Length: 267
Image 1 (cartoon, helix red, strand yellow):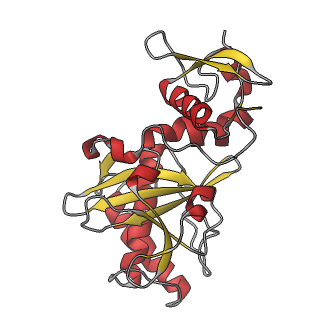
Image 2: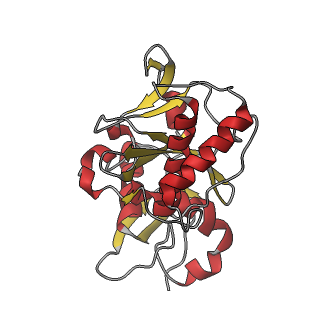
């Protein structure tokens, strides 16, 4: 494991944030699409059924934000989980918990992910997380554009960045941690940053050692490879990286943040 700097373990500010990405380039899918959890009825119908189960299990307990009722809130949440699961390749926890979920909706290796979903008509919703921050390592924002019949993955951030935000009264009089679009990583970084840390480091070292990006292991070719020179106290080398990882490593070095990565050998 190598670390570019030892002064700060927080993620670098996104070299490309969600605010820099055209909205129509964010990944989305129809809400009537079929997925593994809903092979016949589609996401929307599956979520309605799951919402009723979750609401009944909680017996009217829990905090509501916005104007929708409890069943509708559960439906929005589960729909977002299915959208995120399908678009980002995540397994969805279908368990119904009487006292609420364990603080996350998806898991990759030892890393946990909580999906926050909104169905607001506002075109650029923010990521809102309770001041009682769930236990997840990462937080995803999904926006349901129900009038268009689509669900969209907006972006993500890490737990520490969430907790560093001063609480705001959003929505209404409820104080929460809130991230704007320029503070979130766009979905295209998800595989190289989150998936790589959660899966490839633990499970596929031998496969990655043979080929691929030296940070995340993604297959590379001459057209997409980026070479970044790192010259620090314990590491002086040229890293062959995919474009996403090259941006992250370069941003971390330039801004003085720390970023940890496994240095895989190129063939």
